Amino acid sequence: MKINVAEISTLIKKEVEGYKSLLSEEEVGTVLDIGDGIAKIHGLTKIMAGEMVEFENGIMGLALNLEEDAVGVVVLGDYLEIKEGFQAKRVKQLLSVPVGKELIGRVVNPLGEPQDGMGPINTQKRRPLEIIAPGIAKRQPVKVPLQTGIKAIDSMIPIGRGQRELIIGDRQTGKTTVAIDTIINQKGTGVICVYIAIGQKASTIASVVERLKEYGAMDHTIVVSVGASESAPMLYIAPFAGCTMAEEFMYADGKDTLVIYDDLSKHANAYRQLSLLLRRPPGREAYPGDVFYLHSRLLERAVKLSDKMGGGSLTALPIIETQEGEVSAYIPTNVISITDGQIYLTPNLFASGVRPAIDVGISVSRVGGNAQIKGMKRVAGSLRLDMAQFRALEAFAQLGTDLDKTTLQQLKRGQILVEILKQGQYRPMAVEEQIAIIFAGTQGLLDDLAVSNIKEFENRFIEFMRKEKADVLKSIRDVKDIPDLELLTSVVKKYVQEFKELKGLAKK
Image 1 (cartoon, rainbow, N blue to C red):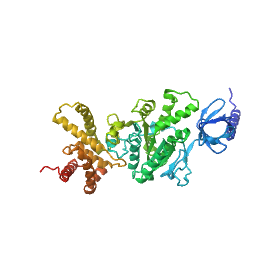
Image 2 (cartoon, helix red, strand yellow):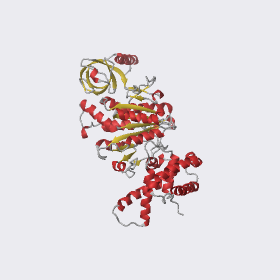
Image 3 (cartoon, rainbow, N blue to C red):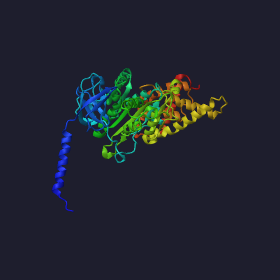
Image 4 (cartoon, rainbow, N blue to C red):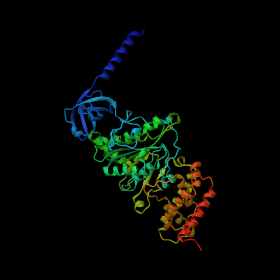
């Protein structure tokens, strides 16, 4: 059979021309029905899922449902301004958001529009809202620590750059505080932070922004704000928008970034609302069947890029609110299975004054010691063990039985360590200072002090180290280890003696 090349090339040219005319054709549809943030549009036969739609009054929409006779479009704006019979045209673009360094220090909505009254944001760059997460070849193992400044986390549940660590707990247990402290602690480290407030009270978001400004953290932070009064479509796109803004710094500049999703429970609720309004079939707890995919495709974008890709990273700290500690509910179990560990906060510890109220027993980091410097690894190993033994003994001691001297000593050590791990709000601590005080506790150098004096001792000891022994702290910071164990031991012992004399506790 002879192939006619000219005939085939003519056919290909004709097809290409037809495709070009199809692309250049401005497709316009008509709004059949509008309500609850969802528009049904007839006539957009060639539209793609995830494509933008522009209504005749300039409001944008996002095509989510492609049906036989109509397209289900979620309205990204005030849907009350759209009426039946309005014209809606294809934009022939996927949803994108403005990105770039101009956004740093600003409060924006998920579309990148300013919300802080500080004027327009002059950035020309845009990135698509959704991308396919980098594959295995583009990644490298998580091994660089992301210091939160919180002793309990950095020592026992370490977070690495590129990790996904879930913060989970009931309402009012300090989840947002852990996230804000972590942002404050990134000051001067070059890490760009994006805080995404999803469906929160406007007053709560305003107080978070004020706190970040007060501690100078807005200089490296973008706040994506979508309040509780906003429509479900805006709540739905918020975490993807914030992630995209962070990705610009990671991919374009090779920087390390931190994204906090506060919180994904409200995000899942917004997606459930959208899906039910779009008449998608409900599944468990009325969530749609793809709610797992919703969060997995978002959190999978957290990555430590390979050196070939620039070596940047995106660390994700999603927050999930539980009801009465119910971690086996649908959304908590979904997100736990996607992330690389969880920090579990409990109301009982919070109420008893242990703050941050982290339950060390069931909190875990699946990166572990890989995300710690050598010095912290050295002191944290015995800390975890001591805490585990203390929790077991504490339960036993409540039975009121007579305890031997060794058991009483272990209980006392555990109580001292609990006091050391308590930390005030918005007071992140440098890693070398954490190592110094944890070393003092785990080595038994504070066993002679009363538990009630530990907090005061810690404050005075850290102040003493900063002023008198700055060289010791500097050596720990520089070599990322304890270069001279004997020197640190003698410094702690000497100061314990000074503290006893100060408090009149020294033996005459």
